[in-house]
Amino acid sequence: MSDDRPVRGSTPDPAATTDDVLAGRNLSGCRVLITGASSGLGVETVRALAGHGADLVAAVRDPAKTGANLSAAGVPAGHVTVRQVDLASLESIRALTDAVGAEGLRFDVIIANAGVMACPQGRTLDGFETQFGTNHLGHFLLVNRLAQLIRDGGRVVVLSSAGHRHGDVDLQDPNFASQPYHPWLAYGRSKTANALFAVDFDRRHRNRGIRGVAVHPGAIATELNRHLTAETIAMLRTARASRPRIALKSVSAGAATTAWAVVADGDEVGGRYCEDCAVSPVITDPDESRGVMAYAVDPARAEALAELSAELVGEQFAGWHG
Image (cartoon, rainbow, N blue to C red; front, side, top):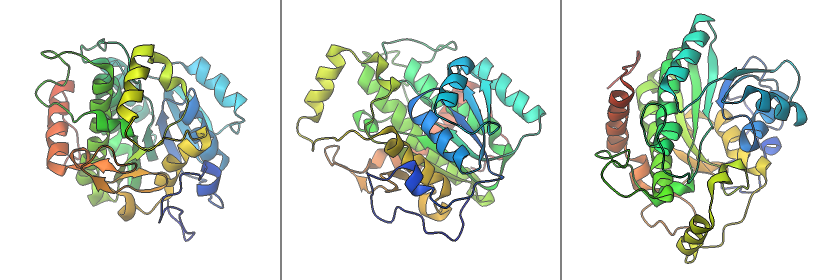
């Protein structure tokens, strides 16, 4: 994915947009699979990559909505194929990945973009806590089942969030079976899981030049906020009271770090957490304005989560290297 052009991101650039980071790039011949392309960041990511020549498979829950929104965003005709998948259903994920494999498609990039945030307590179709099951386990199964279809030198970009600061993964009770449920704690754990997944995937596949990277898009007003209630908004404001004011980004600026991670040098971003089109510092204080908590990039924790996740979804994967 890299060429001789300089890649923005040697220093944080929160104002960069997708058009900025992809300026002058030719992505013709690059095939990307992206989840969650029905609105917001997903639509903008598809628009930007397709506008630079990439071909995309949009794996989404609602194909009709996705098609309408991509068309309204001016996505170039012929560059996107929309496929149905429900990340809250292991059966649905297996059906999609089996079909893609049977078609012989190969990918240069997979972007794990879909997600839910701060939703009421619930369970996926397979009995997992909704946010852990959808945000992490759904992507864990989908990406690992497609890993052998990623071309050497490819990239997996996983959307995490600064929300990972709300909590580390709980390897003993990932589904809140024996503790009180809180929507933000569950969200934080799922976003930590996303970051750890990128770390472990990178370790297992870097021998083929395939790199995993986690990205934080920043604070953007999108449909991800649909589950927020007055109670959770008040709690979030209280939690942020001692932190620097968070400025909302435009959707294009929010999707910029994803686009940057697609084209950045693999050795720069592999196994890392990135924000504002740059690799983030590792921190131990959740009140820092930038950075990733150390527990969210810990290789041993990442490996333990991967082994647990494989057990939970009931599957082992070709190409895993311990």
